[in-house]
Length: 91
Image (cartoon, rainbow, N blue to C red; front, top):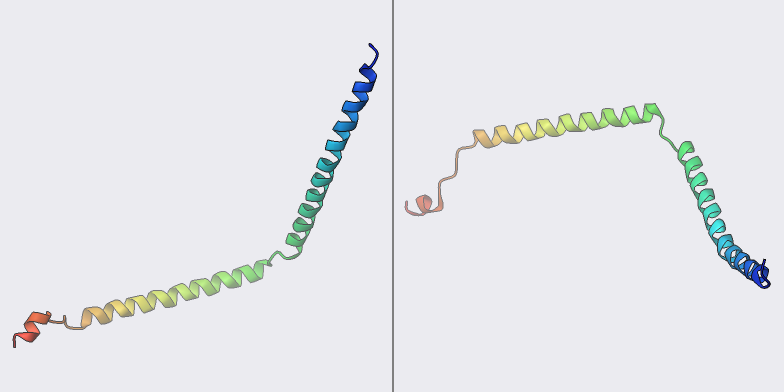
């Protein structure tokens, strides 16, 4: 090795380590946060029974809303049409 090459190599390694350590710290911190979120997600997962109950409630709500819409359509069809404004005023 030529003289001074070893000093340059040491300088490059020091700079590389200086840049690498914060990156590794960020990655480790991110990994820990993701592991925590994953564990909390497993604990807070809804049970099958709760999901099925919510689905049943939503189906019931859809049936009630469909019936209400059908009733409104029937009421609209059974009411006589309103005369135009000119027809009412010309009388």
